[in-house]
Image 1 (cartoon, rainbow, N blue to C red):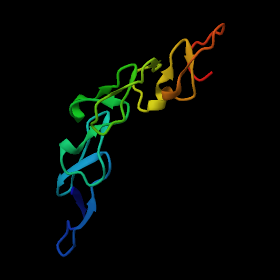
Image 2 (image 1 turned 180 degrees about the horizontal axis):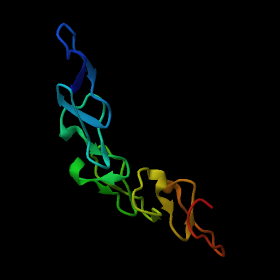
Image 3 (image 1 turned 45 degrees about the horizontal axis):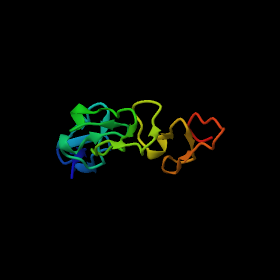
Image 4 (image 1 turned 90 degrees about the vertical axis):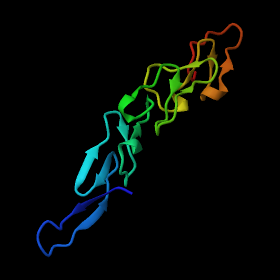
Length: 129
């Protein structure tokens, strides 16, 4: 995996290798490169292709990460967006968890997969209550 070295710059000095830090990739030697904006990598990455979109973002590769669309959530790690369950929505773009999907108007519930239709004669604007 990707490593960067420290030491070994002077004659007789031994080079010590360290795993490349998270959020960077290390193609070798002392070179450490930050992943593109809105992306990250696990420690030890050695190629740009190991940088993936961060949670709340989606894209084909790390260089094309954009905010997750409304009414969906994006867990990151290069995975595609996931649509909110039926009759739920997100308040804004950039959601990264299923729990960010809220019950829509006319229903309520503590979890997006447990939305209940509002009882007759009641008003429910959506959400948890």
